[in-house]
Length: 426
Image (cartoon, rainbow, N blue to C red; front, side, top):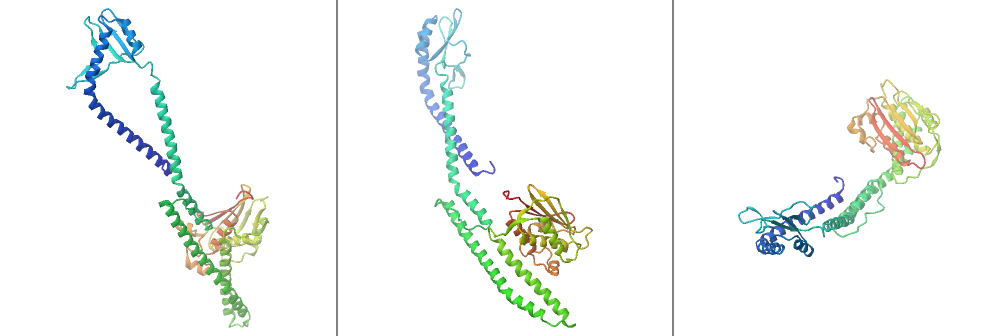
């Protein structure tokens, strides 16, 4: 009930209805009984006297039976010569009232002149099943009303479900379908406001993406020309260090532009992938063979035998492996063990785990490691040439393949896990 607004509202309405009904019935009963009791009491007492007189003194069982056949009453006679009950199976129940002084006195009991006690009561033998039927009918009506209230509240809160579904779509970057506006009340106005906010966010994201793409495209040509001019510099002793530094910086800028373009391509929903059956273990060996020195020991590959071939984009998976392994190698300086790449079967797919044995990171920064341009140690990343796009690109590649992405501290070191599902399981 804590997690269902509909159930809480229906329960509130039901309890409110029961409380109002009980208060009304109690109040009306008190109001009517206080006014009618004094008026009805003498009439009822006179009627009881007439019925007892009709039974006679000494009481006649035959006249009592005739009275029972004519009226829905029960008769009990007890005395020196006659002891008889019209309903012997029923318990002895006395009907009592209170007089003005508050003293209890018997109201439907009379003593005849010969010493017999005649007590009258209502006979429920003829209609004892009626209260049960009324109770079942009342329960049925209550259940029907509760069901109608649930249906009404369910329809009333339908815009909230639409707003929740729309917010989840907007969170994944799908702004094509706005939230439907079904009513013109407060919830309809809320849906319109969320749609307007989503359009503003979409516009800002598109403007940012367009700016990044434009800058990246425009930088490629001057970077290519600068690299060409640098390579044409004479390889003299005095210019060699400058030439090497320029080429290294130009290579960093080229990689940054390439990563920016690739991140924007992968960030689009339904990014186009060139899928083909891929031996991931063989692809990992190719990446390890071409991995340059990153200041740490070379990563070790542990691949399980007979891994399934999955439909993968070889270029994007090569980018993922190169970035993960290069990141692990950079942060394994001084570690006792080299980084590890594990390829394990997992539910028909492949689990890819890259772990280093370096210092790891603070737990507070783990959720931010795969964000674009995020660097937990800006000085260290800047010195190594990183700009904070490596893990971001890896996460985009994993999600583009329908894989899950996890980053955690391994104590020591950091572990990144990517679960690639088999076809039909994504």
